[in-house]
Every structure is written in structure tokens, then in C-alpha cells.
Image (cartoon, rainbow, N blue to C red; front, side, top):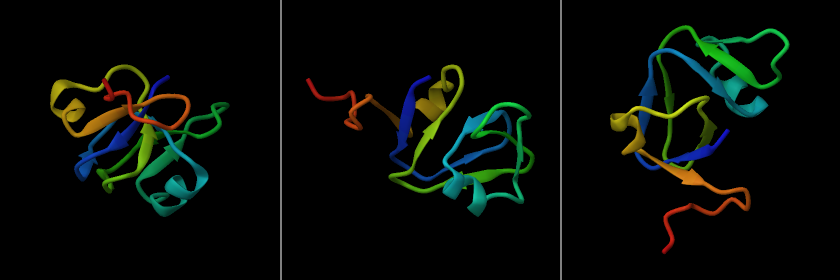
Length: 82
């Protein structure tokens, strides 16, 4: 699943995310761990991410969200270089 770097502050209202332990810990009141899926969480209440954070969104982000994210390749670089 692709990783995305947040380029503008975003608020997510539902769905699932894959986060680091640090990211999840800071938002534990907003998330519920998915059983048998390490690092995967269901959003219970709206959760925000700051510019520069890297998140994994299962599936493709919608068009509005995609404008606030940039795909990160396996080496940690953005995929926008041409």
C-alpha cells in the first residue's frame, strides 16, 4: 500500500489508516485498533494530520484528499520528481 506525505493539514472523518505507534498513541482517543492487523486503525472520531506526516491509506484517496497528499516511494522520496 502506498505511503503519502501530508502537504496541507487534513482532517479524516472515517475509514482505516495504517500509522506508526507514535502517530496512533497521540490520537488513541480517536482510533480503534483493527484486530490481527498490526498498525491498522479504524477512525472513530475526526482525526487531524499535520504537514509532513506520513500515513498509509488503504485504497486510493479521493480527489479532494489527493490534492493534500503526495505519494512517497520506498526510499522515502516523493514521486513528483520528473
